[in-house]
Amino acid sequence: MPVTVLLVDDEPLVRAGLRAVLDAQPDIEVVGEAADGAAVIPLVRRLRPDVVAMDVRMPLMDGIEATRAVLRSVDRPPKIVVVTTFENDEYVYEALRAGADGFLLKRARPAEIVNAVRLVAEGESLLFPASVRQLAAAYGEDRGNREARSVMDRAALTEREAEVLRLMTRGLSNAEIAARLLVGTETVKSHVSAVLAKLGARDRTQAVITAYESGFVAPG
Amino acid sequence: MPVTVLLVDDEPLVRAGLRAVLDAQPDIEVVGEAADGAAVIPLVRRLRPDVVAMDVRMPLMDGIEATRAVLRSVDRPPKIVVVTTFENDEYVYEALRAGADGFLLKRARPAEIVNAVRLVAEGESLLFPASVRQLAAAYGEDRGNREARSVMDRAALTEREAEVLRLMTRGLSNAEIAARLLVGTETVKSHVSAVLAKLGARDRTQAVITAYESGFVAPG
DNA sequence: ACGGGCCTCCCCCGGCCGGGGGAGGCGGCC
DNA sequence: GGCCGCCTCCCCCGGCCGGGGGAGGCCCGT
Image (cartoon, rainbow over all chains, first blue to last red; front, side, top):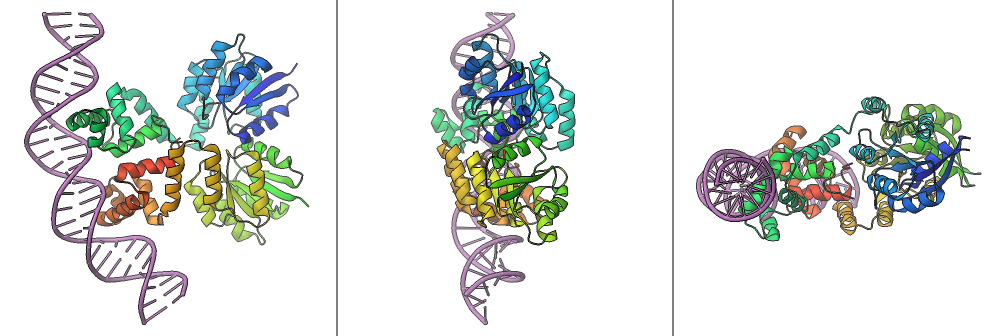
């Protein structure tokens, strides 16, 4: 019996690509598709796929949440392969921590994609940072982003500081933030200074940039 | 006779997706694939496709270069549709300036992809605002975002202003931008003021926020 | 030739910003 | 009880920022 696969990705194009690649294999069968993490649970219950190929970045419920949801609400859960565009995507690591069994780069060659699905179906855990490192080196780029994210991770903003940063990302001035939070402007200045120091930002603009780059705020 | 299409994308997965979507149409036929811009010229010469669907971001030769190369070295060149992941990708604008006839978002629905190919094949030029607006509306929900996007669309920044805004989104001060662009700080201040006015922003922070919200810069 | 848009640079000036340093109150933790 | 982290507020001050107004050179289209 073939390995059954459920595809979860918000982009129909990617789903079509995965389907084309996987269905071309005699021992693999795509049994369903979903456009968002929120739709995964009932589909997994009904279709009982061996493997779920799941995008990490999706609009309503991302791959991390969806992975957690599947693992805790289905017994004998399927293997979960996380699909991502960027190498060293923090989301991927989170998804793996959440219990995903492996991951796939969208730019991988078809043979690698097929191989990854077969391997996790057999119970192998695909955690090869090595190959990711290679691809990262080959394609370079996207470095600043990872930095921003890790800066934000290590920043350890206090609750108040995070709130102030959030208002900064809405374009508010110190005086406006003060009014919004019902505190004095001097207090806001203290928080802003703390945020700048923790994020390694020179001014509020750089702080806002870091917030966007790190995913602290979602643009789309 | 069907519309013939050549796919150019470094990711086999995307090629497979486009092929699946396009080949499903009786009036469209994918006649070839290439993984890099460098391979396009001979393929175009041999296959004489009506349309080339070309990724903008590729390792060896990007879509901009490849577009230019095709247009200048082939007579009766094919229509070129630029394929991108991000809306408002700077590369896309460059490609359009280089002579591309339209563009496609990878996250577009299959029907829209098919439609875009048919339209350019018929000689329609798919330029941005309208179709982007549609896609944004279709996928949007998020209202503020669409507003930001339309603000950006109507902003009509000059080339220089856009460049200054791009540097602003990198966290640079006026002095640093001046140094980077080899002009005086007063000049930069003029451009910044123009950008703020056109974007309806009060300060550079708000301008950067608008840039992120509108997709002028891609965060992830 | 004239006008208009763009890029460049200049002056003045008020204001918000951010750094440095300090301090008091409150809560939790050892 | 004592310490520490967080939130709150204060003063001084230099600097970058942004507004307003102006101007010259360039190219393009009329």
